[in-house]
Picture 1: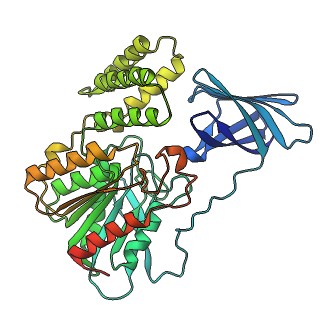
Picture 2 (picture 1 turned 120 degrees about the vertical axis):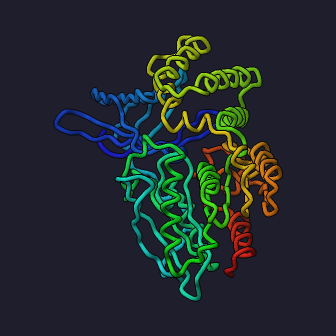
Picture 3 (picture 1 turned 180 degrees about the vertical axis):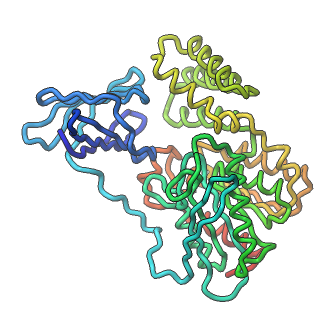
Length: 436
């Protein structure tokens, strides 16, 4: 049983690659699981039982279990994967997943300077580590700070074996723009506690990145901007509202409506894309709305958790206690409570700096229509004379050319960022601040 096992789970509406890692120590067997297509790695098993030719692996935090039997030649496990009351056949073959092709990843030598940097974060005790790429000729140059999306992310925004920020930084630096990308606090080489941080804390860190660039001779002080993806677009809004010196912001799938609205719209879009009947969709949307309402305006996590638990007990009777507890814990984390209660409109209505907002038409996480409309309306009310709103046809939340926009495609698509998205951002910055 010991070793790596990989296979594809066919759940009807989606196919997910899974990798199971089984080890044996003095105290027995342990296991972890990766779901590359969901960007999840190292999920620890809560229990591993081996009996003869059979193995049973439980993941209590997921409410999931795999039960399999090894083949006579030891080359495969044949069994079932169960979760949320559903059971699917799953055959795992010995070995790990092959490395995915990522043709856009740049390879050295680079036609620009690459500098590893560390700098104080937005609060005492946090030191951020990142990579600065600087055009080799000319200067001072316009500059961009890259801010990642939600979840603990490193400086390349690694996801599904893609490195979007590495690709974006390479493209922009080749066009004459200094680019700083850095690990989130508490991630990779940056210190601090990620779990207790909110978007406001990440804005403090982005301001620290601004200070680092502001003091460099090879950077134009009036042309430092923020390019934020998803939650990073929210951070860009907040930083622009507190930092009049900021030259511009670019929001890649940034919010134009409130946090709770984003999640309700997201859940409905994902469920519809997965092929759920409209009746089931209506039930799930009502549940999502009730959960959001239980968290809104609730600054006390314990009280919010109690109200969310009550919603599950009413709307989903019989749901296992472990799953209820896991969901309630997620919805009452410091980050989530802050995000659910964030409304971008007051901020947007105060910003008059140059802004580019872009979304993909197949984005199912931050829907293009309502969010771009909200952004445009906010800037119109601000009297902003230099804002550009672009919906890029056929692109998903990661700005890849996609078929469905589902997250299960992210890892299967070889393209990291569509050339149209890269060019839109590069052309917009160069037109205002120079470059090539």
